Image 1 (tube, rainbow, N blue to C red):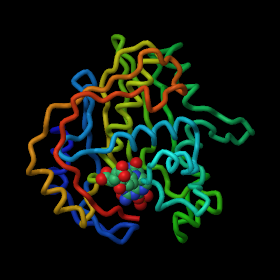
Image 2: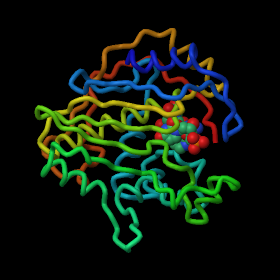
Image 3: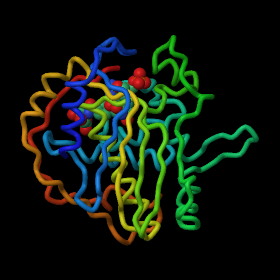
Length: 277
Ligand SMILES: Nc1nc(=O)c2c([nH]1)NC[C@@H]1CN(c3ccc(C(=O)N[C@@H](CCC(=O)O)C(=O)O)cc3)CN21
Ligand SMILES: O=c1ccn([C@H]2C[C@H](O)[C@@H](COP(=O)(O)O)O2)c(=O)[nH]1
């Protein structure tokens, strides 16, 4: 995961100080790109131990189209707790936009089913896109994420905003545009999550995995993560692990946690950091 360490180093060296919504303060750059060849191993950060279970459950939860944290809590995943209402609601976040985008004419669009059908039917298409960015549902910035969720708005506007697939030579690649990226806490999750999604979509479309291209808008290191970042930069990455999917699954919505096996994951100890709310 040299790419990830290079991103951290780049932001430390080239970034500028910037205030932010959470009041924490960041060092930030605008615009950056990483590329992972998914044939070379599964891109899970090795310079700190990452909790793959949370990442897989979060992705399965998006794919179910759910926006209440009940499923996550039932599976011991707490990463969305701080933004949800007492009833567990987050408003119409990723799951809602991916699976049930409400069109002005009353149609409900399942972008994921549409995407799979389009990849199978027209792999050369340049329109293989899923958008989570829906201007009609953006939160009111004068109130908190929880208050927005309670009013039916998104608790947070989607950070992983839009992704596109590309088929070439029997291989499926995916590019994500992430408008805002918490490099220490969020990005290891985002890389692994989209790498996994690419493997899953490739399998159900009978394609081999290609590249995951990760493009950033505001990529930032929170000022209260800098010690953790330096600890990580002093560590040597290990070789990448491999991800095995149950080959019998041919429906993108049929995957369960038991269908994912991570092999040879060698990582340095976990590093704790506070999350900016
Ligand atoms: N500031 C901020 N950073 C984020 O990465 C982020 C948000 N806010 N808000 C919405 C989601 C929630 N995500 C999160 C939230 C918390 C962790 C986190 O605390 N990770 C710890 C523990 C992981 C676990 O419990 O499994 C870590 O060490 O990775 C990661 C991603 C990503 N997003
Ligand atoms: O998947 C995610 C979700 C969120 N983040 C980070 C990026 C920012 O640090 C915050 C969101 O705050 P905004 O003010 O809405 O940009 O969460 C992430 O890195 N990955």
